Image (tube, rainbow, N blue to C red):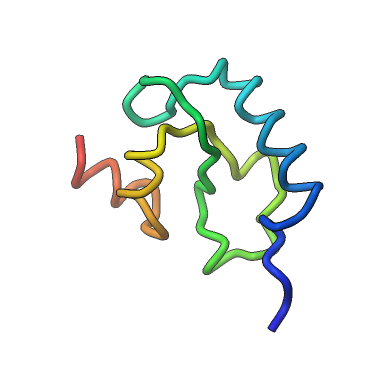
Length: 79
């Protein structure tokens, strides 16, 4: 099984860049973001794991609730 790219130094750098880019604001609830969420889940699209275009800043509760659901499904059922 391949190593999870989120356990890498590259992931930590990309995550920090996304949080700064998004002004530490959750893309879902607009609260304070402390995590980075994959728009398209790494579970289904591992090749996009480090893609800036596939990442948004997220608060921990929103990131946990979204899980691996598609963003459209999460938004339609949560807000």
